Image (cartoon, rainbow, N blue to C red):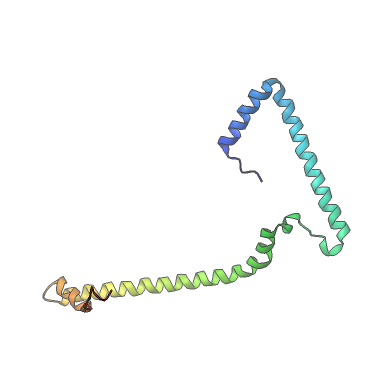
Length: 141
C-alpha cells in the first residue's frame, strides 16, 4: 500500500520522536493503531454489506477486482498465461536446436582445420564464401 523503505521509516521515527517527544510517542502509537484497526473494520463491514445487498452472484466480491488493472489481469491475462508458457517452451526448444547446430558447425570447422594442409587460414578461407565488392559511385549519391 505504502512504498516506504527502511531509510524513510527510520526518518519518520526520528521525526516523530523529535516532534512528540519520547513521553507522548507511545500514546500516539496506540491511538494510530486504534485508528488503523477502526478503518479496517469499517472497510471489512462495508465489503460484507455490499456482498449481501448485491445478492448471491456477488457473494465472492473482492473490492480489489474493481481496480481496472486487476480486472484486466484477472479476465484477460490469466487466460493468456498458458499460451505464453507454451511459447516460452517452444522458444527454448528452438534455442537448444540452434546451440546444437552451432556446435556442429564448430566441429566441422575443426575437422576442416585438421584435414587442410595449408593450416587453419586455408580451412577458414574454404569455409567462408568469397566477397564480391559492389562498385561505388560517389557522384550517384
